[in-house]
Length: 434
View 1: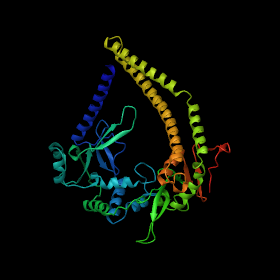
View 2: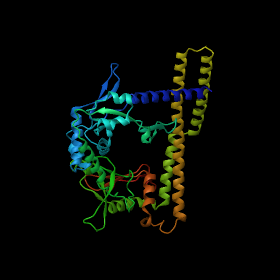
View 3: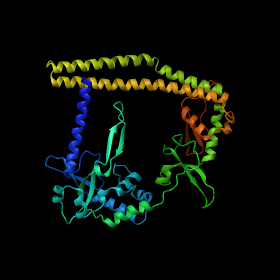
View 4: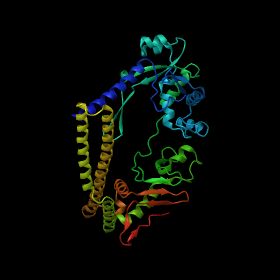
């Protein structure tokens, strides 16, 4: 009963908080709870120091104006990004501007100047009465998205977009911003009309994508790419460094891109020496499974102890609440007791999940080892021939054994594995190949 009441109280606190934010937005005030204000603006505050609106930040708004003008003149987001980097700090304070940030600025209605007659239907009569009929306003919306936790065991959240009728419009005075409606609308139209490039992954499975192939210069994952010499000719497929591509040739020391067929063949030629030897591969899996078991000698016993302690904490919570109901425990002391119990409970639940994950990882390795061995014995045509393994099967194996391929700026590639060992030599495989 105490647990139910506690969850109900927590739900009501959340509802009261949301009601307060919604009420503030309906009064025509901007919330100050965001990670940061919209770029180009600064908060205006009331006598209590609380953020209630936006005012134009002239220095940053000049950058926003430049973004719109460049896009309206036909520049791409990539060109805008390159122009800003090294000259203007990004909204987060770093040097690198995200393309998503630039696009979100262009699509945000807070930068679109609207006349009084266009704003009036969007807000209440009380708010409209306070507006200057000769000024232009952007619209900041409250309630465009709803977030909720996936479960009480994780901090991960789900973000859902609300329908427009649930949004609350808050007018923002754009006087002194220099924004012109024609320029903003043309910039938006240029983005909408720009043709979308077909993904480089169309028509081909890139077996080293998805966090397997990394740039040795900047450390970021290599991405698939394709090129052709002229229209009508066949595409050639590559892996390239995204940093070098988006930030310029001096941003990363990696000298070139890598032909996909060549690097994939080199990796598979080396890996297949182990993969096509079931005895060596089985021994490698056995050693990794044994290592994991030694690292956590008795997860079952630990899970039992953690579960028992969680039950004890639930009993402690009930006793504390009963004492409080009877007047034998001060409310402040109850809050301290419940806070301590909650902290212990969260820590124990995290440990319980870790134990379960440990067991699940071992079970997954055992299942994958058995599946590989069965594929050798009963696999279809070509399963015993490494040259005929499909790319999807190679990719799955690379993921399971923890393969990491690194493009060396000095030339060639290097391979690192998480656990595969050479059973015949009795030592770790030489996983460096140039």
